[in-house]
Amino acid sequence: MLAAKQPRRGECGVAATWASNRTTPRRRSAEQEPLNNGAKLRVFDDSARFGQIASLPEDLPEQSPTALLCLALVPAYNAAETIAPLVRELLRLWPHAVSGVKVLVVDDGSDDETAQRAQLAGATVLRHPRNRGKADALRTGFAEAARLGANAIVTVDADGQHLPTDAARLATYPASAETLLLGVRDLVTAKAPRANRFGNQVSNFFVSLYARRRFRDSQCGLRRYPLERVLSADVRTRGYAYETDLLLTAARNHWSIADLPIDVYYPPAGHGSSHYRQFKDSLHIVWRVAISPITIRPTQ
Image (cartoon, rainbow, N blue to C red; front, side, top):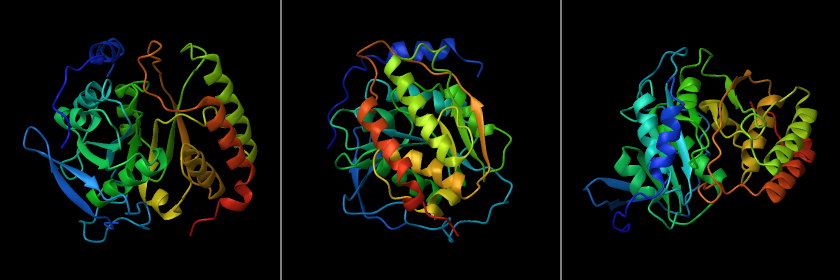
C-alpha cells in the first residue's frame, strides 16, 4: 500500500514556471493495488519482459494509417515534487485521448509518493516494484501505449525540465506518425550547467559521426517516437543509452527524422530530480556509439 498523501512540497514553483511560459505484449503479469481514493494502480511483476512485441495489438480497432494517435509518456523515479503539476498541465494541453488515456506515468520503483501523486493528478500509472532504469520504464510505457492503440508517443522527463507546452507541440506537429521527432534545446540560452553542455556536445559529435548526419541535440528526452517502428526494432540496451541506441537505429534504418526547437527549464540546485550522471552516462553513450556498427541491427 502506498503511503498516505503528504503536503506537495515544491510543486508551486514548477507550476508557476510553466504558467509563465504558456503560449500554449500484452505479455505481462500484474496485480491491482488500491489507492487512497479507491482508484487502482497497476503493479507490474518484476519478472515480466516488456517491449518485445513486434507490432500494434491485433485485437484493437483498425485505424487510418494517417491518423496520429499520440499519448504522453512520463518515466519517473522519485519525482514526487514535480510529477503532479506536470501531469495536470499535460492533461490540460493534450489534444486528444487514446482509449480514454492522455498521459501515462511509469513509476520506476520510487520510494516516495511519485505514483500516488501522479494518479491523483489524473495520469494512468504503471509501477515497477523496484527500480529497473529508464530503458525499462520506457519499454513498459511503449508496450502499454501500443496495447491502448496509440501509434506515436511523446516522452517527457519527470524532473520539470521539459515544458508541457512543448510536449503538446510535438504531439500536434504535422509530420507522419512514422516520423521520429526530436526536441532540440538551446543549452547556452537556457544557461544549462557547463557539465551538461559539454556532455551533450560530446554525445552529439559521436552520434552524428556514426549516423552521417548532424544531430543538434542527441540527448534530449523530449521526443515523439513512431511506436510500431520502435517496438519492431526491439532495442534491448539498458539505462540512458537506450535512447541513443533508438536514435542510431533510426539513422541506420533510414527512418524519417525531424527536429523541433524547444525550451528547457533548469530548476534551482536541489530542486531537480534528474538522475542522469553527466560523466558516467555520457561515457557509456560514447561507448555504445563506438560499438554500434556491431550492435545496431537493421530492422525488417
